[in-house]
Image (cartoon, rainbow, N blue to C red; front, side, top):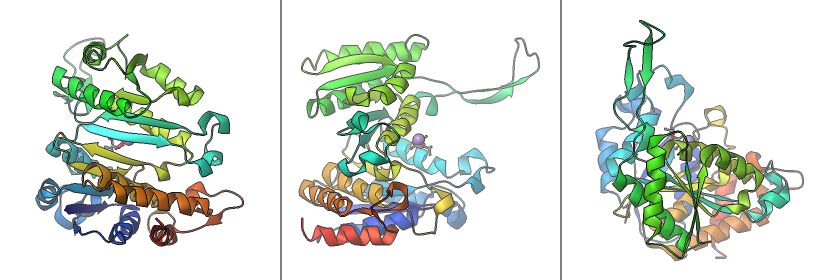
Length: 358
Ligand code: IPM
Ligand code: MN
């Protein structure tokens, strides 16, 4: 089993070191190979996704990804910016299905900005389509506006589009996932305004005919944003397009108290996957040893389950994480009165130690 380790920028290397430590402590045989990505790769090789890194990712059974990005690269041409690395990996590897669970851990109910009763026991799965939509639609660009009220003005444009097969396959992923959980899918669209999302709604409704045991509901994205903070526990599986999924998954993550706790998986149709924390590179706290490594450690658990056929090892990691939380250990992002503040490395060490009991 070969794992590509891509630490990236900001806090990426720090949190990745802890996840690697946890993987090594499992006593399984993995081959792990590290490669630069994002701003770090731009510095080292002049490109955020160097050919060698892409090849490693393509050959690996799974990819563990840290985070990319730093404000200092904002002025680079778009194709050289760190974000292009993750977008490129998604596209090159066909990682169309993005799983972003928002789970409120029992011990962290108080860290949520919502009232405890709204989030206690929360367990939502956001499934975000990841290789289509306005993120990748062509044409896109800038030009002088051909006509209209602002004669001679420049304009910029992107193209929102989805094909039937793209919608069908993500809908199937959502219905299959719902079957193993609460048997309800909320498909989020903007069918009242956008043709792309009327089509989305129509195709999801068609695919639903193959899953009569799963309840399907449709919701406009603006309402979904509201319902997520009003009554989040009404959701089970939420499926949506690339851009709405980007926004709603950040919103949902905050219900749980800390984005520092949430793993994610991006899968293709070969079972190959990229696993990464839901949070970003947090350049403001990079190098300080205070970042929360648990989202990356839990991403490693997801990787063991989905791409490496090691569900028992995944459960061991998840149980160890539960244990350290129960022991009251907290990084700064989830710290509260009466708990013990620890740094990135101490948190990783604690998980390794807890593995001995699981
Ligand atoms: C995410 C990020 C990316 C996205 C950026 C870094 C390109 O926000 O994974 O949610 O917009 O998809
Ligand atoms: Mn995002």
